[in-house]
Image 1 (cartoon, rainbow, N blue to C red):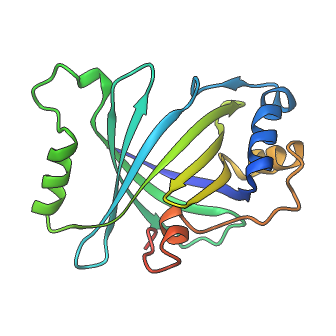
Image 2 (spheres, one colour):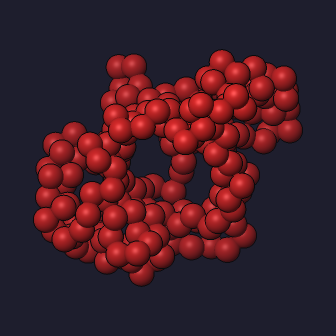
Image 3 (cartoon, one colour):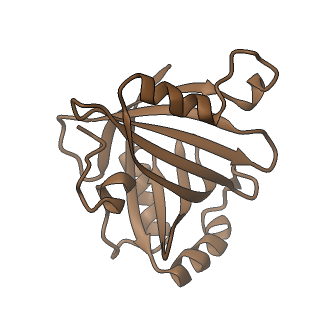
Length: 195
């Protein structure tokens, strides 16, 4: 299991801004593309009776088999300019485990969450393309595919000073920073992932 502090700036874009900026990012930033042609992520959120929220992310890649990651986030008590949470992740089945008899397929994950007393509250698809800037900063272009409602975001994750550099270089400083999680955005605040 991995525990880390995640600091990110999430910025909503129009469809045109999303595709224009995605095309220019590689050249503007002079960096490497880390996600190949991108990946499809299916995010399913579950809630326990005490309000605990768990996300299961299934990552589908053209180059590898599916990967399942359990995720739990907790708000930090420190006030920051950007969203900053303590994140716990557990890779419960990865493409390297495909031949293992210990893997949990998608239905097994659903059954496990139900057995533990969690109920499903949201499921959506997201297409993500990642770019790496320096040693620790990832720029992700996210296309959320919700029926009849496509949304486009750029997320910049890393140290605050690197987030600032990326925002300046991409010339998106005038855009509003979104501190809510995708769960909060898509449920209009009904559920809060980062309790």
